Image (cartoon, rainbow, N blue to C red; front, top):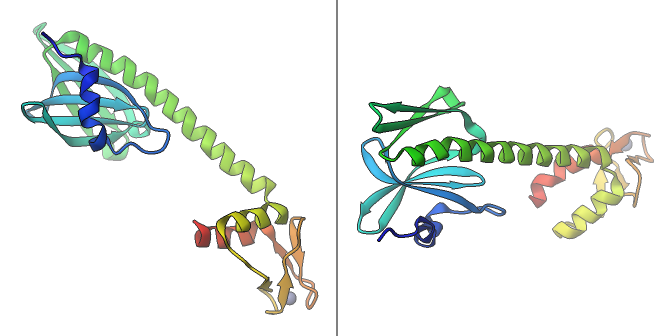
Length: 197
Ligand SMILES: [Zn+2]
């Protein structure tokens, strides 16, 4: 009897080091990589090859981030050997997986590609969100941001004359009453975001 491959997720999930919002998507059995037999696991963020150690023990062996994948090519030799080449953008490295079952490697290409697209869209959305924060940045946002981060800043020093400037409750700029210099909420945010993390 063949074991349901998805049951294997249970045993491997710890080794996948799933990040926040990361979930397992698919698993392919009986895949070879660098003369090692194992499993290829796909999450919505990465592709992980698990080397078979014996019995039902597997060890993570290779990890590829989906957004780094440039291309996946599928090829069959002598109708029995099926090969999938995964090209990643970094130095054009190519990782080659072999399978004895045609369906295994054929589905790999399509499913991984679909998830690469999801992942790229997700990254784009995150970057857009970051950009929006940049545009909206003002002292009202900054005060909230500091409050949530547990940072208390009674005043800042003017970058021009060194006089203390009280932080306003709103607006995009803080005025130095001593020299008339403006401190932008955006610039201050850039400085304090590393403090809060
Ligand atoms: Zn000043």
